[in-house]
Image (cartoon, rainbow, N blue to C red; front, side, top):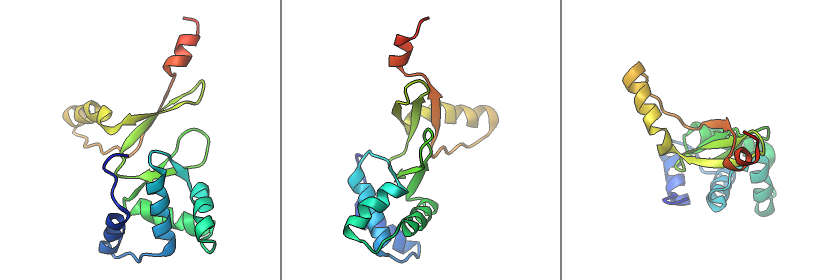
Length: 147
């Protein structure tokens, strides 16, 4: 993730919004920053956090990611059939998911700029897509299928 905020910046933002800084909140943010482009589920986060902080339980991680999502710091991602995963909201992107092989391709948020502009122009709708999953068929699977 280029331009990722520091943990101190994220914590300062939480404090500015009136939130307490707990071990769990700090640990979730640290693990997401360490994960880079990787999306982590609450279970993944709990496993990683539990190694350093055995007193932080899965239920606490779930409450923490919910709060951080509501605060606009995290984005919850639903891709495919698996559990929800999370990434920092500053890393705004969408996903293209192949229905054949399950490959997930990250799509930059800027790729939707023409759609957002057209919605505004044609329908007067001010779209603010946080996360979209677009299903289809990847190039590899299309190349392997008969035409």
